[in-house]
Structures are given as C-alpha cells and as structure tokens.
Length: 91
Image 1 (cartoon, rainbow, N blue to C red):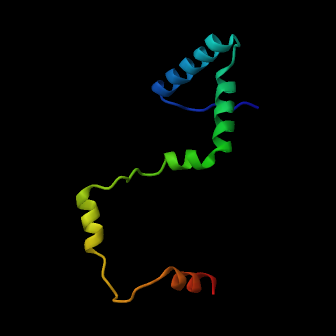
Image 2: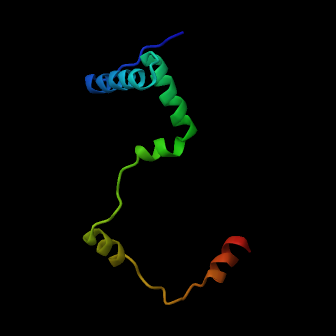
Image 3: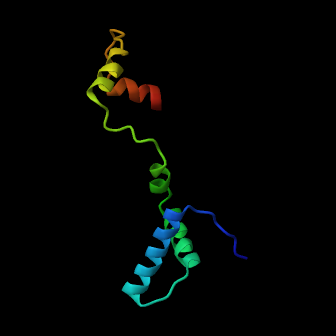
C-alpha cells in the first residue's frame, strides 16, 4: 500500500532531478517512490550520519565562546591523573 508524502516544491524538484539523473546515467527508469525507498534504505544503514545532520552545528567555537567556557572553570587544587579516573570508572 502506497502512502503519500508531502514535500515543498523545492524538495519535489530536487527529487525529480535525482530521478532524471538516475535515468540518464543508468538508462533505467525509476519511480520517485523507488528513489525515496532507496534513500531511506541508505539512511537507515547510516543512521548516525542522518541523526547528526539534524544536530545544531556548534563547532568550531568562536574565540569569545571559548573564553566564556574557560571563564566558568574553577580549579579545585587537586591534580587528577589517568589512574585516578580509571579507579573511579573501573574500580
């Protein structure tokens, strides 16, 4: 059973261009449904990339943002070694 998907005109146009390019380069006619199915299949195989594409881009930080971060840090006066961290994490 097919279900309709709403998309804006720009997205529809890009989907049509993809469909046309596939036909030109492979000589195979594909439907927009087939193109979307393949796109979804590929996205599922690399979910991390897809999910990351929706994250707010925050890197690299500006110099003022870095300074603001470091201004909020305080020293406890205790030096922590890797062994200390391992003891806490792994016992």
